[in-house]
Image (cartoon, rainbow, N blue to C red):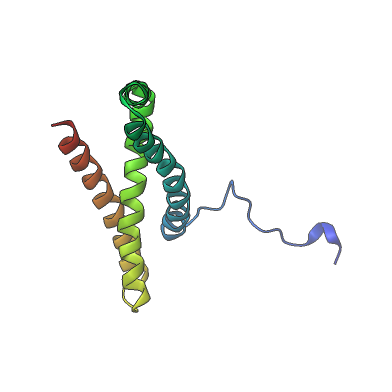
Amino acid sequence: MSIANRPLSPHLQVYRLPFTALTSISHRISGTLNAAGSLVLVYWVVAVSAGPDTYATAQGFLGSLPVQVLMFLWSFGLFYHLCNGIRHLFWDVGYGFELDTAQRSGQAAIGAAALLTVFAWLIALV
């Protein structure tokens, strides 16, 4: 058998990742982005303690539309990481490993994160 005739692994262009793999990757990414978003929270707290001028500057920056969109996405990532972490707690005790259960719990984590994000922003805007 020559090297040219050997079978090749499927490339990412033709291989479709399972939903559970995507939720696992998203959980890791959201954890990393939560750390970055926390730095913005630290900036805001330091600005509050630094005085009115510094706070006004921070509010001007944090109140801009692009930063508000990023904060909305960050809050979704925070809630997703929370909901998916609860899902992992069930896995730690041995529940929810069946494929259909894992898929439904992943969908529930995404849905709950979306609802919590919208609810938190509605409360914050009132």
